[in-house]
Length: 170
Image (cartoon, rainbow, N blue to C red):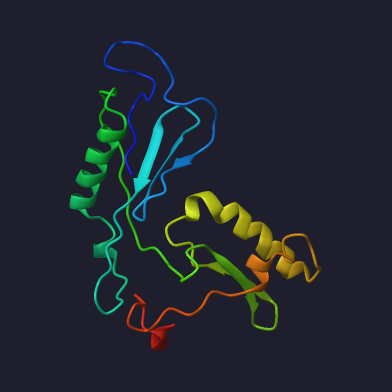
């Protein structure tokens, strides 16, 4: 989602930081928000609005939705009412999902290809973990990561009626 030009500025003219450290933050709502500071102390803010289209079509015209950007901007200013900033960027796109609500990894094609899927909109935070698991899986060696139950098991398949992409098209 968009980020403001200067996340440190507030309406009182102070330069108090929004939060200390370089870590990201998320809330625990079902339709969650995530935010983190960029290297130049701007704020990346996104999440919340996941729109599913009947029939499971993944089309580029679904990627950018002005109503979503306006809703997130409203949520941003509810979260940070002290900021008087303008948004410079916005993005959107398809998300994948699984019943476990967290990514799963595995191998295919005789172990020659590794995959990580089912991030359920949480890919920003967890892609590094998924990449490390895939590299370990491709090495063929048992490691601390490949031994995790989270890695060794797969989520229950989505019921076809809930799956955004029909299983016949996978």
